Amino acid sequence: MKILTLWLALLGLAGCTTTTTIDEYRSSNKQLTVATNDSVVLLGRRDAGHYETDAEFVDCVGNKLRSSQLQVIPEQAFMDALYPWLEPRTAPKGLMRMRQLMQEPLVGEAISSQSIRYFVWLDGSTETLDKGGSISCAAGPGGAGCFGFAKWDKASIYEAIVWDVSDYSEVARVRVDSEGTSYLIGAVAPIPLLTPVKSDACKSLGKQLQSLFVAD
Amino acid sequence: MFKQTNFSQPIIGLLSALLLSGCSGATRIQLESSFPALLTEPREVRAAVIMSPEFSEYIATPNKNMTLEIGASQRNIFEKTFRGLITEVVFVDNLALIEEPQDIIIRPSVVDVQVAVPSENYLNVYEVWIKYNIAISDTDDNPIDSWFMPVYGKTASSFMLQKDAAVGSATTIALRDIGAKLSLDFYRIPALKTYLDARWQETAP
Image 1: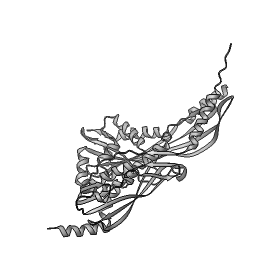
Image 2: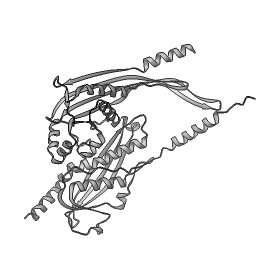
Image 3: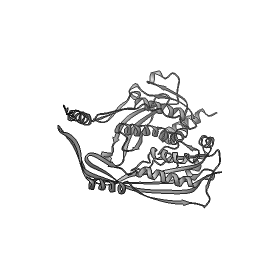
Image 4: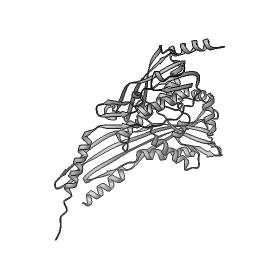
């Protein structure tokens, strides 16, 4: 019993860790100034064919930025205010298209009225890379239980691209790459040892983005 | 005296109920989404949009285990979209209810609805395609064009998201795509563009 407990404890410690790498690129060494009335908007990219940047992740990063006193406009509210110009089919992929869009009187007014200074585009997903082991659960007149062992590797890869709307320039790119393995042990009761890969990616990306912006 | 409690019966009952509900597999998704108004400048056109009761109460069956009640939501988004694209637009159930002469008469209809779930597409997303036919006719109801318009929506699969909620979310995104697609392409439909250009020249002072 002691050996099993020790083994589970070791597995818990080793299994629940993530490896997170952050790459950052800035077009200059200056921090990005945000005036008192200025706002930042975070938007997910949703035009890729095989994955979707989920709104939950965009909200999570937005909440991290809000905690540093930045004014962050909620994604869905902003998409609704500019409907249909930020839908997957119509969202600007590049700065040239963004400039064209801003020249549309109604769109330009809507963005100005919310004092948006920076657009942060989030692109990426969390995927299961590998699965192994097996676990089976059974129930009978004498009781029920799960036996076996399963593990899976997950990776969260996200990139944030920051556009400055005042001069239509790309000012920074931050990429976060977080990997980890989760386990499920069936020892009568199923014991999950989950690695919060996505949550770790959100925290790391949020923290890195916080360091980019400075209140003016 | 020690009394032994038998836990097996409730567990078996629970598992049986779970199995029965799991095997039934029928998903009924009722969509009652509301959509924002379009941020577009409408053009000087008079139009009637005919949305029949069948269209407004449309229930799609993309496969034998799934029904998608999209009628009310698609009516809502078509109304919002055409109000954003056309200055004078009326919405009626049938042709007989049009009271005044119009530049164009529009009849949207659903041609096909398809749904793909992660177990079918081997991706981490739920996908919904809706193919519409937009039949456009002139003042006297002579056909101008019959334009097929596919719209698409997808939503990421996640551990906590149930299948019906995920398909519902993908359908809402597909319906939002109606506004995007029509804003970009409605006035670029060649036959419609030619017809409206000619009509504006006729009526120009």
